[in-house]
Length: 279
Image (cartoon, rainbow, N blue to C red; front, side, top):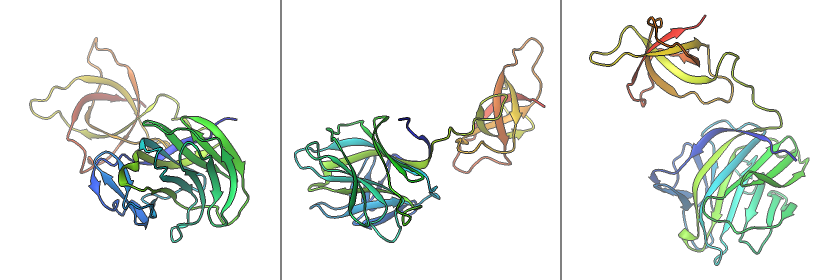
């Protein structure tokens, strides 16, 4: 069975300090979660409920969430769950994948009815492992380090949409830690490729001349398009001057860009050089 195509819409690497996680983009459930400058752990210990639904972006009906494990204490067997199609006002909703140590199978369940949809052989989670839960239509996929380890169909119409979830219940705060969380869209159809004529590079601001003292190299040819392709990141690249290749200078085709009026407030003020716009 082929894995669904996953397109990330948001990622949190927890490279800040916050207890609970900031809202937006997180909505706390139970005692919430906390970020500790590079990883996430529960907001409270003692095997209490600690969760967060990612509500910072609109979640597609067909969605996924994925984590990278920083640490997991097998001796203490803390609870670790991922969820899709959650109800923002109800923690026990949606579809939830649970892990409670290497001696207990993974369980994927309908959290509202507690029906276990599938049990899967467990594994010993270690640092760097990637665990993903995805749903496309009525089919749920459990993906471990890039490989589908189980899938099941559930036709419960109560769960057709909703945000994604990260949940932990440890004895001690350090028993389970996550270094990254991502969520986005899932599909059995490949993403739409960039328009023909080159890859999509990002956004630029066109200026009249190079800043005083800045070098002004010729970069190559770009094609200006209206917007980034669907599902493709749109980084801000910097400022460019529109011109032609000097005589004898190579003129490679770089790809597609979007021209914007001004740089984003948080972006560095970078000058790139000269580009030639392709018709």
